Amino acid sequence: MTKKLYYESAYTREWETRITRKLEREDGAYLVLEETAFYPHGGGQPCDLGWIDKIPVLDVVQEDGEILHKIERLPEGEEVTCRLDWDRRFDHMQHHSGQHLLSAMCLQVCDAETLSFHLGQDYATIDIARSDLPQHQLMMLELEVNDQIYLNRQVTNYVVSREQAAALPLVKQPKVTDDIRIVEIVGIEYNACGGTHVSATGEIGMIKLLRAEKQKGHMRLYFKCGYRALKEFNAGMEILGSLSARFNTSKEEILDRIAKWDQEQKQLQAELNAVKAENDAYLAGKLLAERQGRLVKHVFADKPMKDMQSLAAKLTEQADVIVLFASNSDYKVVLAQGRESGPACGAFFKQHLADYRGKGGGSDKIAQAGFSTVEDAMAFYQFTAQSLGIEL
Image (cartoon, rainbow, N blue to C red):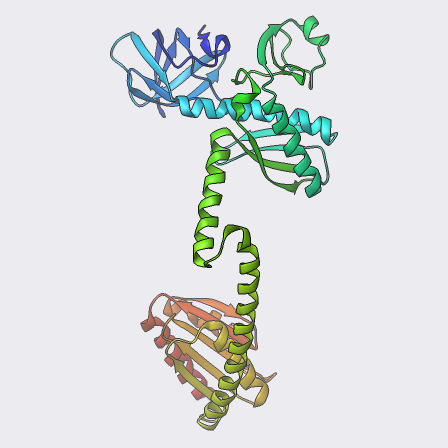
């Protein structure tokens, strides 16, 4: 059986060992080693990656007590030098220890047990047994958990028997009955866990709670630890700096400046809407004067779909007409009518759109469609105008 070096020390980065078995499967090549510090998937923690004789390790899994290392290709010799991707391992250590500490503080501060833990590439999450978590309590939790980091409490791990485990105030009783591995944050908690951890809480660096959201009757907390938290802070500062430069104001005054800018935008939008309404009124009169029977049709150079729909609705409210619009800029077509007995716009589009490689639909009163080319849009527009002209 492979000797698990990560249980002797989570800080082993390089070692030499022997290959005890080589396997070739449909999905790739695998090795079993005499000794390994590569941690396999398990307990919410992703596997380690790294190199075996400079050959990249792609995955590490545990099967029937054996640890299998998936690699790009099989090495030639039997003696190999192994090296961990230390940045990845230490990130996992920070987050797994951070999760233990956060879960302990959730129990202490919020009286909430942790139900599950997930460590992803972007962030980590825990689900806790709470139906809600107010913002002030979330902030208090963050302060409490970081206070424990600054106290630099020792994190130890050791193996105990079932009887010894029963005497410890464990957060949760383990499923295994022999050789139970305990991770203890001194003065905080005892937890049965097989993951890799830092040796003291100070190495977690910091824990930043990103947000809390409801998830199937519980609360899910998103967080980052250590270097990930630092990167999150730096990314936020970069965005804040860009906004500060964009609005030509200090970072402290950026919220006031954005609020002022928002008011300015609302005022401009109101003025624009007034101008659009005036322009639509003029355009509606012009189009009604130029209509052919009941059909009002027009091709716009760059009118957005929403504006075409709005104008079409105005026209059908003002007169007993059928409206057909097209836009050359985004290859869109709109058809609308106001009569109860008029052509069903949505049904007409559904019947003919496929012939012109268009996609869309709508109701009896109004329908819209988009096309991949201006040629297809105009061909459908001409076909629709001709069809409606015959009906009229």
